[in-house]
Image (tube, rainbow, N blue to C red; front, side, top):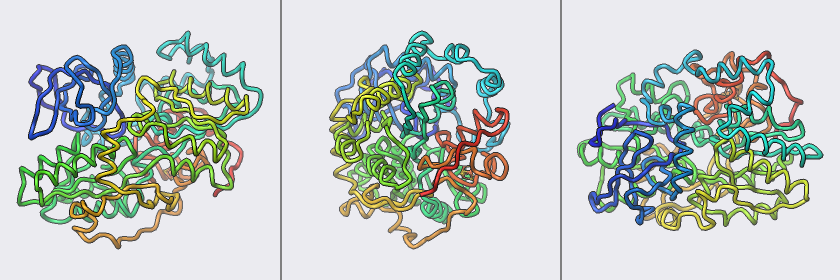
Amino acid sequence: MEHGKHGKYRIKEEHMCLAVPGRVIEVRESDGTRMADLDFGGVVKEVCLEYLPDLQVGDYAIVHVGFALQRLDEESALRTLKLFEELGLLQEEFGDPWEAAAAHGPAAQVPAAARRAARGRAGRSTVKYVEEFQNPELAARLFERIRATVTRPWALMEVCGGQTHTIIRHGIDQLLPDEVELIHGPGCPVCVTPLEMIDKALEIASRPGVIFCSFGDMLRVPGTGRDLFQVRGAGGDVRVVYSPLDAIRLAQQNPDKQVVFFGIGFETTAPPNAMTVYQARRLGLTNFSMLVSHVRVPPAIDAVMSSPDCRVQGFLAAGHVCSVMGIEEYPVLADRHRVPIVVTGFEPLDILEGVRRTVEQLERGEHTVENAYPRAVRPEGNPAARAMLADVFEVTDRPWRGIGVIPDSGWRLAARYREFDAEHRFDVRDIATVEPAECRSGEVLQGLLKPHECEAFGTLCTPRTPLGATMVSSEGACAAYYLYRRLEAGPRRSEAIPVA
Ligand code: SF4
């Protein structure tokens, strides 16, 4: 941790998935790029404004991995920041990932709030848990509205891992009427990064003369027999960065080294990484490359709905993904599968509102796309970010961990940027791997199995000894169940669900 120039503390590293609202306190040009300092409830960080060039001092925006992606009104921003602070998410977001990775273990993984929640649930009452919501009266009204609406069983899938985390942390699924089941979808980028890509990262990070840069969430993701944390312990130069642009700076500062950035994630993370490759070419860097494993949400929804065993009848789409991409890709999916899709945020009341709207559509027999997160999502998304994506990346088939190849579900570097492709530069294209047979994360990611229904859950597989990525990432469904549900009396085994 170091002190920033505004007298607040500045922290170097973070987890990768959260988009946090911040207030602009200073704008400047740096190396031909529009940059700013933003205040995140006391933490000041440098942020790239290239995707929101009109942002001015005093404005608020949601920021992901050092890039401002969408404007936010002050009231929403302050409310979200307050909630993040109360839940300890700012510390999770801006804390030291090396410390977190080193302390990775069962006791450390269960925060006090989760322990209290788990203890209390033995004799839970709706009122008690509704009181834990930010606006208990509104939460109670939404629960009541859902109860009054639902007349038969419905299965909804929340796409985003951040939504899953909120649902499990607040026990929303346990408070909903029995007729409404929430199925946890594949929206955790760490979880779906295929094992072969982790092994390629480990191979490159182990090579002499390489500085391998990653977000903190990837440190403990198990490859075949080891992880990045262990590679660093064995002498590899593995660095955790806050923004992919930090990797550019490292390349400029270390011309005798090859700097490689691990570019994974959904449509929220892809624009920052696209900008980084664009900047590397603009600056003429020959010692920078990116190991790219980006994935796209709409083809995953299509694949889930196309499975013969699919039970999903409605989707809560990922709000932050839509803040970049807009909602144009969803109507065709809603029509094709006759399924309502409601763009939803990740705070407890957002989730409840998304559930309410989805259930009301289902009860009316409708299947339209609704935007329940208009404070951060415009129909067109962020046009500047989408234009950069179209320039730097091209759509490709992509394997998803535990699921297999989903057509057109990923991005790779476009041919004109191929010189920055680490797979080619380090010739690791042919590494092939076999997933551990005991890990059923593929079924978890498709909503076909609840984490605690896996035989290894909490025994062979814990955050200290993860068998699959869904137990590692803070957004992974297995980790969320371990954090918030493992202390409950006895596993709750639902009816067997056929495997695709
Ligand atoms: S509990 Fe562990 S082994 Fe089971 S599906 Fe989750 S990550 Fe895989």
